[in-house]
View 1 (tube, each protein chain N blue to C red):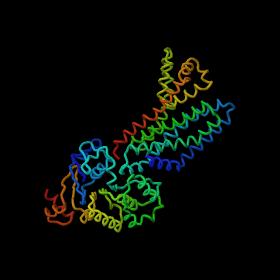
View 2: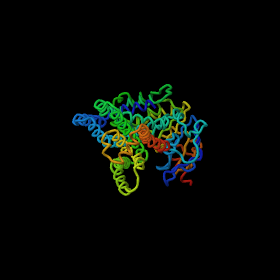
View 3: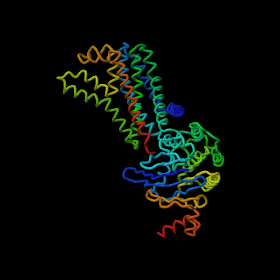
View 4: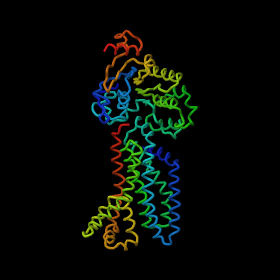
Length: 234
Length: 255
């Protein structure tokens, strides 16, 4: 569904992505992990062309995204620590996002309901707590029933109950055959969700493997243990 | 794009600063026209007022607005919207709201007290200066990630065109006073939108007779239809070029 081919990106002298090659298939949930500053967010943003890559190509459904923008209606993006227009109320923001789209298929309001977002429709975005903003961000990412969900640290700042609701939603969408890419540092929550693991370090892919392969290789069930074993082996 | 324009418009109209700007303009323009005994003097005072306030307010307000609106921009670039459309929508929303504020604050007063060619020219110059300095502000916002640097750049641009440029011209004129530089001066004046607007209006008034030989040469150019047309085209280019450069920069900007 998404192919990343020889993608490189540098910010000034700092090479953030080095010749990245990846392929993402529908119906999988890919866990993108790696230390801070390894280029995870930059990779996710370059799929959305929020960051313009220097070299290489990114294909969405077989077509290069270069210069394209309409493909973005098939992607729901939940950024890490988003900034929203402070003066807008939650309701107005959601209304606007719907209003801005030319093609609106059936709206998926499940998260709006389960997070009880309607109760805070009148509040301004600037007055919301970090976790609540995160919830609004999650609602927006899922709202348009996208084929691909790109979630950058989705549960960071969420209370355990809300994190659980979000995780359930993610696994439900994965079962619906969607592609889900999650970048996260919380390995325990990835255990239940991920079917594939991509490990990035200093702008390169260290490995891309399915969970089944990793489990077989290391004879461990938990992602944290798997990683520990893999790195000890080096 | 229309949706982006209407969101920006609605957002700015609710802004208190723009209300303040319109009220100040209104108070000043009403007092200027009712205090001066002849309409011509009124136009002259109004011209100086517009050349001072309009560029300053527009460049500062637009720069600050663009930095505040960066959240809105960040949010929308991940959506199925072309960056070109987004940037154009921001620009149109910005200039239409600031243009409305100018019309409400000063436009109708000018037309009321000076319902003739010069009045319309003054109105057009005020609007064009609004567009020009908003376009420059958008360029500043896309060139500098740091808000302080962006606003600093904008203030510097305003200072340059309002004050420093004239000093530079004066220096050059003094140095080359032995040469026939009058025609060249017309070209040089095109490089500063504020000066261009000033000269254009001045040449329509009787005061141009007091300017000696340079005034006569200027009148020869700016007094004619072609001269006015060329000057207007230059002012329009002054708005379009900074905007196009900013749009080109924005298209490849990493967010």
